[in-house]
Amino acid sequence: MNTKQIWAEVQDNHRKMRTCKRHRFAHKTVTLGQKINCLECGAYMHLTDIGQYIAGYVAAGGGAADIWPAYEATGGAVESERYGDSA
Ligand SMILES: [Zn+2]
Image (cartoon, rainbow, N blue to C red; front, side, top):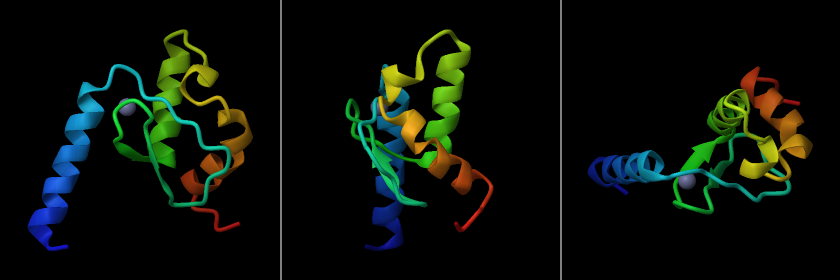
C-alpha cells in the first residue's frame, strides 16, 4: 500500500467515525495495540480512543455496556495501553 492509499484509507475511516450515530463494539478480548471495528459504521478505532469515547458517553449519562457489553472485562487492557505498560 502506498502513501496515497494509506491516506485515503485514513480519511475514509474518519468520515465513517464522524457520521456514526453511536459506535458499538463486541469484542470479548483485545490485544494491546489492536484496532477494533465499530459494528455500526465499520470504522476502526484504537483501544485508548474507544476508552475515551465510552468515558464521554458515560459522563453524558449513558451506560458503558450500551457501547461495549464486555468493556468492563477489557478494562485492564485499556488501562495497560493508556499507560504504555507492556504487561
Ligand atoms: Zn461507529
